[in-house]
Length: 86
Image (tube, rainbow, N blue to C red; front, side):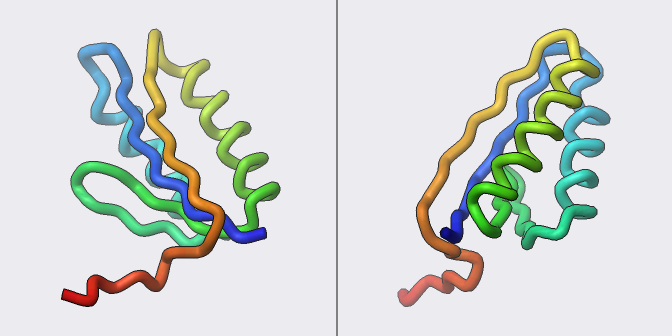
């Protein structure tokens, strides 16, 4: 089953920027399709391996920060080829 996941990472500390950069680089280096915009990062792939990957990498990020929020939206389909029609 394919999935599209939108993520926003918000470290709750002064040196937040490097934590976000490191997390996005980890996503980019994965086997999954990754698209970015200024507000969020989207990652696309098979649901179970994708969630296993995100669980592992989010856990690492949580260990490296004092406090962090992850906002996640999950859609059951691969929307990586979406283009607006208007």
